Each structure stands twice: as structure tokens, then as C-alpha cells.
Image (cartoon, rainbow, N blue to C red; front, top):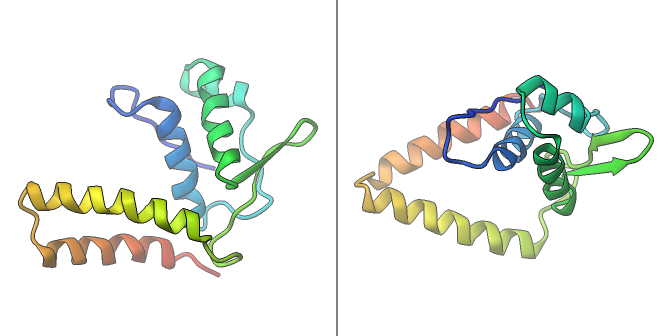
Length: 130
């Protein structure tokens, strides 16, 4: 799994790890059952505290995206298209999307550009499906 972090970003590192894992799964670069690096290995690779990685993995576990087993470590649990999204997730996702669209509107991004950007990003995720 090829995770990317920007250690200079204002986005917390644990959130970047979480987002990068989700992105890799959505793009088809990580599939159900694939192992994630251990918390200590990932922390060493990026030169960060392993508790930061643990926080990201705990968040992914709570979201049902990964499973953690003491013997086998963290593995991908969710994969696009296997299970439909539950209603609670969709409601929370719409709330986050509303804020992102409001930010785009306030910053002057027009409707057509929003739709074009959304289509381009969705193509990233749909292009690697099997």
C-alpha cells in the first residue's frame, strides 16, 4: 500500500493516514483482506510516533474500513461494491459534502466546475475496478 503524507500540512497526520488508506482502497490499490503496514513499521517509515498511526487505524476500525487482529495485524475489510452504504453513513457523508460544496460556492467555484471536478475524481475510483 502506497500511503502519502504531508508532514507540513495543517491536516493532522492521523487524518492524513486515514484518508490515504481510504483513497488507496477506493482506487482499487488495496483489496479486502490485504494487510496494512504495522503501526510501528508505518511510524518508522514516516518518522512519526506510532501512537499517531494507532489513532488512524482505530478510526478506520470504528468506520468498519479495516479489521485489526492481534495476530495478523490490520487488514482491509471494506471494498467498493461489496456492501451498500448504510443510511447513517450516507446521512453523515451528505453533511460533510454540503460543507465542501458551500466552501466551493463561497470561494467562487461555479456549478459546472464542481460537476467536472466530481466526475474527474469519481473516474479515479471507477477506473481501477475489476
